[in-house]
Image (cartoon, rainbow, N blue to C red; front, side):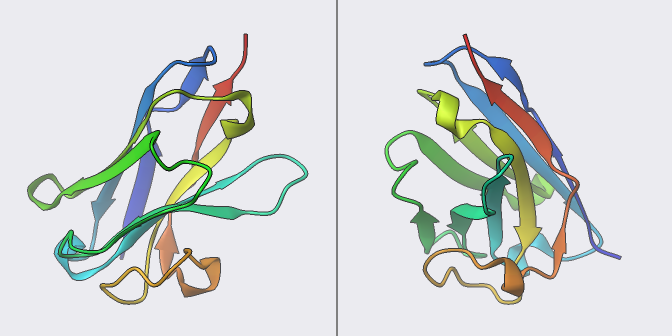
Length: 126
């Protein structure tokens, strides 16, 4: 059974940083692309980033380019999202999910997610 558990969220001031972790189990992490989504109250779920199984294919949404960095450590079965220069509009619940194939194909699509976690809350406020 595939499991993904997000952690690392919290309350930070604008301009601060957080590092989210996605701990996985029950599947070969090096066989799947992993994506990060976020959802704020009253807004649609939106794709944030994707990393392919080989690390050769990475996607970032325009609203996080230059601020967020996605990475993976297959030996630790963990994917990370380093978030810098956080803005109030980054406030959301952040989810990691397993894609249905090893590749990142444009913006992440929730419909292609085959497993996901419960999310971790990120709040950016002064």
